[in-house]
Image 1 (spheres, protein in one colour):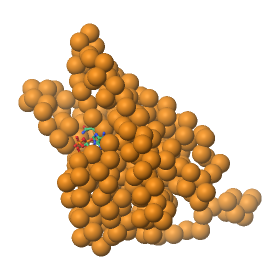
Image 2: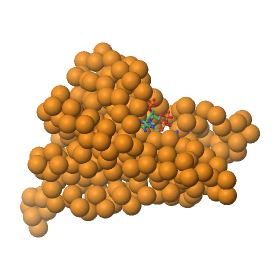
Image 3: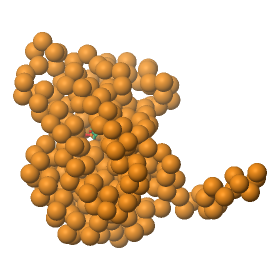
Length: 264
Ligand SMILES: NC(=O)c1ccc[n+]([C@@H]2O[C@H](COP(=O)([O-])OP(=O)(O)OC[C@H]3O[C@@H](n4cnc5c(N)ncnc54)[C@H](OP(=O)(O)O)[C@@H]3O)[C@@H](O)[C@H]2O)c1
């Protein structure tokens, strides 16, 4: 019986090896700032080559240079993820530049907050087409290669707002909840091809996106965080590194919340 169980176990390997991405190629959208930038640096430190996608060319170039300084191959791509044709062209270029893609992190995102009654069509569409459409465009463009390789990791950055909703963020919440349904569908569709797809739902992370929140609201939010501090981009990057690594081989279709215990 013991021998039967052992047959199905991986050979033991040192824990420190499990977060290694040596030889892997990662594409990270929204790599120019905040969480995406931290993910790009964490992956590069773990040995991955990184294709850095951002809307603004200077931001994309800056992070690509930083990854280069860490000794990894890197290239900048200025792309609006909301535009399918731009994404398809960038995906082709990435495959030509790097030869393959092992990990895709759909992180690019925006918010255009406002009460529902006053929410414009433009703000609704901008958030949906960037946050949800962007993930769809990049996943569609890069999954063909992963299917051929019979291996790949897709990580979507959703939000706790997609789990619990928030007044004034109907567009953002809809896009992030949509991303969770998208994640689970892709996980089911690609599982037999050796591709996993998971989501990370960050709570309040200190980046440009949250910098405009006023002191009163910040204090109220802080009181709702059991671990007693706001999250940092590196908190999310470590989770992404785990999901991209061999340590997460048997995890797919999941949403990992990184929020200091805010939602449980
Ligand atoms: N911060 C939080 O508390 C928090 C919480 C939960 C979830 N999230 C999610 O985490 C992700 C990253 O957020 P963040 O806080 O790091 O935001 P951020 O600091 O505002 O950075 C957003 C990044 O996304 C890129 N981006 C935006 N629209 C794009 C587009 N149309 N095409 C390509 N790139 C685009 C930006 O590119 P440029 O720099 O080139 O403009 C930037 O690099 C987002 O999906 C966000 O919804 C954040």
